[in-house]
Image (cartoon, rainbow, N blue to C red; front, side, top):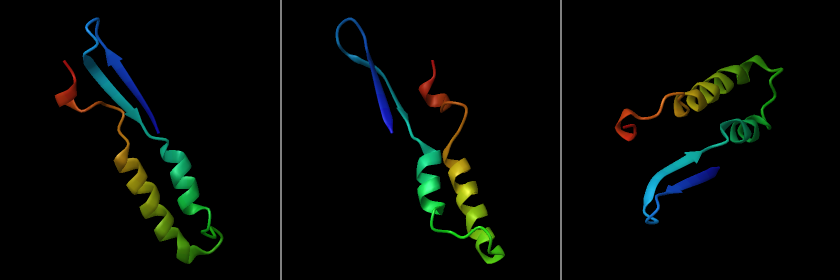
Length: 65
């Protein structure tokens, strides 16, 4: 995770942006799963879908000007 803080000239917080490394925690989550066994595939699919649902390409409209 990385966090960036933007301040104005009066040192007031203007913006905070937090970025998560979703791929790393997904890789760690799935590292113990044997992908050669079809019985594990539903778990992997659910995990990938969950990770994709937590990431978005567009910012929350409440945070934009």
